Length: 361
Image 1: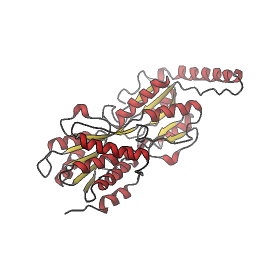
Image 2: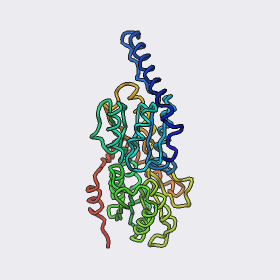
Image 3: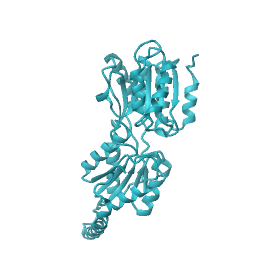
Image 4: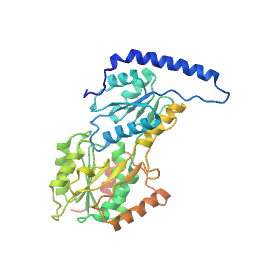
């Protein structure tokens, strides 16, 4: 399981259960003798996050694990990390983490949003899932379908300002709600800037999040179809997209540029990373922890936005300062409400947007 739990849970589970029982008893005593009107926060010793891939992808997995660790440190709770789990059945891992003392399970993959609530209900541990906002249940389940659509809209405006060919590409590793909302907003932003811009949209596979080889092939096809700027959405697969961009040439013979999502690949950029729609999940996880402690977890779902800085657009040296100032002005309009970017979560609506306008031979 890629050293996901060190040391072994079986050696510590009995002590953990005894410790939790003692803490529960002490909490009851403290509550009984507290002053009238005082509310005792729920005990939360540890949280856990389960990630499908290694936390070194400069994206979904790395940002999630880093955010959980930061939020846990700020709240004074231990953070258990289980990474590189894949997309199969994670019920055994969920049980191990809960038995090891995790009072909140963050199931950091849409493929876990069935197993996590089942195990959470079985063990009476609250769980956070993604891509199932309808599954929210007070005290049990909350969703954090993070949507960077506002940042993606800015990315579309930026790309349309800088494209030479008038053709933009979107390569995505699947069509989960979070990717769909960004694809739709990118298209809307690009067309708000340049109505006749053409979008080449391609999906690597139904869940090709780690398929770097497939991502490279698909991205090469999109470049050959005229795109000189690519919005790439994928975890490990994004490295294949970036490799295709670095090795390829646009149809006009010039450079191809890449717009990433979630993380910041500036440290490995070879001159092609134009920007990234950055997601900062620390405020999301910090709020979850606070809600568990206050006994109100599951009363709401969680999201990200430009307004609180949990979504932002990365400026790289490849973006001219004058263009960036224009993008910043648009960002302020979104924050102020002058421009409203609504999330579109279904794939059919994305496909309709792709085909709605801007067609060329």
